[in-house]
Length: 348
Image (tube, rainbow, N blue to C red):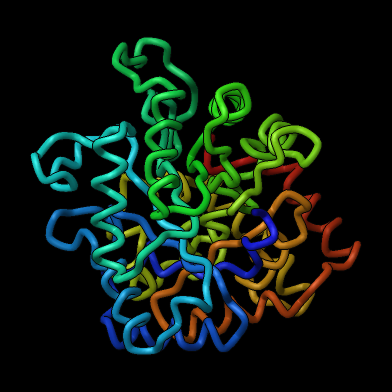
């Protein structure tokens, strides 16, 4: 299963609210021509999530498949929402949960919007149980919920759509070591679908959450779960475009549109770290985005590096980073020096 999840991995998902259909098709055309063969979406996209635009990302991808005949040229991944208050996702107005009725309804709706008969990889977008997410700093036991959907029930729900031929493989996203272990243990003991991938945030300024125990849990000799690294540019911060006082760079930016989610990348210590990484990139004749993306590509546990762009120009720069190959020892040393001074500044 892992061999089908190839690098690089292009994601239109995060910016679809700012991209028109023709522009989306143009980007997808260029990505495919450049060797990108993995498209990631989600039922809740685009973000910031609102009822009025929900599903637009799927529709753009679906119309691209229909007009270009490209469905069989890519691995198609999507996500079913975890516990949340996005009641507009469900026909009966209930809140999303990772149980059979929600998973089946979500997959059927995604297939219809995408205009396809199966999904290659279905991921649980975030856990059904309480976990600290999206910049939350620590686990708060008082936030635990008594009505969590049990891990085994979630896997049986995923088995339902796999057995129906609607989904080939399953994975998780924004998950913890505990969650990965529980899913893998139950899959083995109960003969249920095994999670193949984990899609978590990973970048130069968000490293330790994966590099410590999650890396061990996901290693080939352990659970053998592949990382699909999202936000490798830290919401665009690592491109360096937010350095300085030029407000024009912030207009319609992800930071401006999704302030609550992106605030962790704009903390003062985070900006300091970005400035240091920008200097490293300039020293070695690279753009900041090229350094950030090429560095993620060097990590042994990364199977796909999820890139996304508003414009074709941004996409071209992002894809260019995949041509760099191995980074020199000098570059890696300089990156390590910055990391020693700024460990995970987005969580400080």
